[in-house]
Length: 204
Image (cartoon, rainbow, N blue to C red; front, side, top):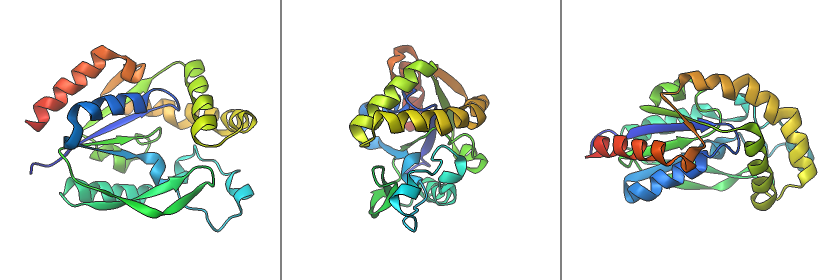
């Protein structure tokens, strides 16, 4: 098998990264493996739940990028890996892992993947999804309440104290590393078609 092509999809919280990723994955099906940066949050099971909830999950140091980099290198070399999984309600890593296989296309999705030079340099294509802040905030509120067991008050506090400042400090500046900036993510059908055509040429 030829060396997999690694596509990095970054952008702020609620920008539409997942929608874009799912659209690409639905097209290529078994040819694609999707990795979420959120799976590589560091485990803090040594801390009580109340203390874990206070951690800054939007700081680059919150992620175990060393492990992610190593596993990406293994996948690109044609080897399978055991990816960690993360439990958001308890803010800690699960015992279970997920086996990832070196398919023709690998998508890495996450808000801070372009902030890390080692990860950035492994990406063959770097895409930044750019969406208005008010739209991103509304999407985050809906997601965190519905899928992560959060209250509106906790989402609001986290957004104002860490999410927004970290976006301005780390996420937005990382846009300069992108090969392509896509407004509105998977809802941008022109950009989606261009990406699919580009990837089709790479996996033939």
